[in-house]
Length: 319
Ligand SMILES: O=P(O)(O)OC[C@H]1O[C@@H](O)[C@H](O)[C@@H](O)[C@@H]1O
Image (cartoon, rainbow, N blue to C red; front, top):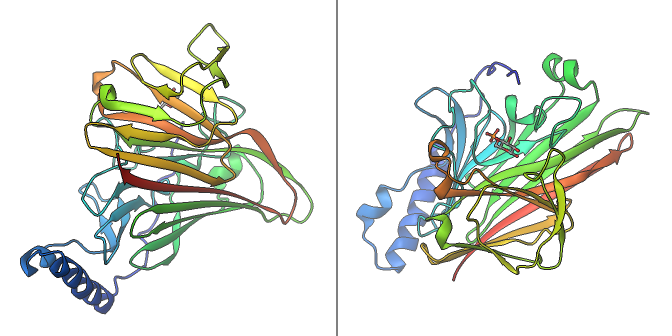
């Protein structure tokens, strides 16, 4: 693949008074639960932040629950979602590049407008470009991706993508909206969130959902992969995985190590699930993540002026 160089920094500015108000409200929330003020004043704030390597991300903080999320402009990728207890649900691989020299290997990574191998580069280009922040509050952000010379070289279509992330007290909602801005021509695309989720260890993880009895493409068998039938209702990963479960979109990740379950609620657009694990690959930190991807595998044909939406809600709960 090749990468588009990070563009100029975003002009979005932190609203200081909003941050101050939020601190007060967080302090009240903590006080009610018996924590001291000292804890409240150390809570981090929402806004645009630069990582150590100069890449910008938006931090969202929920004023009451203290839940937080981080979304990088490079790739428009959510790289962190912590609930109010501070449990992290989203993984970034230890070998990920966080300086814009490669797409970030981790987070809720966009594969768009192509999922797998095809005419353009594997996983498309959405994760290689800078997205622009068009709206933000302490708990929400919308980022936009438009055609550029870089994308037109690969795929000359009149698209507009808006990706919005909203942090609520008990869940994180993401909406990927694709619009065909053209006057006449339709275009086809595939879409996915190549989501990396944390595991305390793969041996503590069970993936439930409507898997039992479903056919899946096991890409790791033979040259072309092989269709197989899932006979389990709860999946445990103890070997390398690259499996496409068409028509399954309700996975739940149950981690007995953290005592939490993460419900992956694909509420619109995302019809299929891909499970990917580079089991045994220590450099990738295989034991501490699993990719449970929200996918639209069969291409969408989008007529001129029309939109498509993929809605994913992540909802943690106690096991
Ligand atoms: O390292 P990335 O770009 O996040 O991708 C992870 C993996 O994603 C899988 O879907 C691909 O089949 C692998 O080839 C790839 O290594």
